[in-house]
Amino acid sequence: MSARELAIPGAWEITPVLHSDSRGSFFEWFTDR
Image 1 (tube, rainbow, N blue to C red):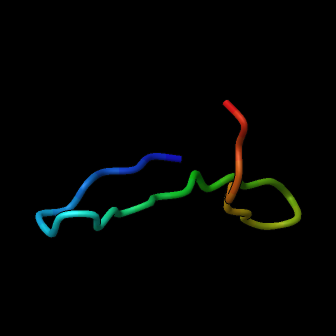
Image 2: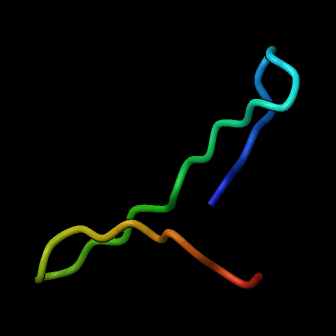
């Protein structure tokens, strides 16, 4: 997951990682890394 601060103070864009396999695609919505 990546995060970047936007031009508006306190506003952030969160981009999850997309994982794909034979079942379909899944977004990583939480990680403790």
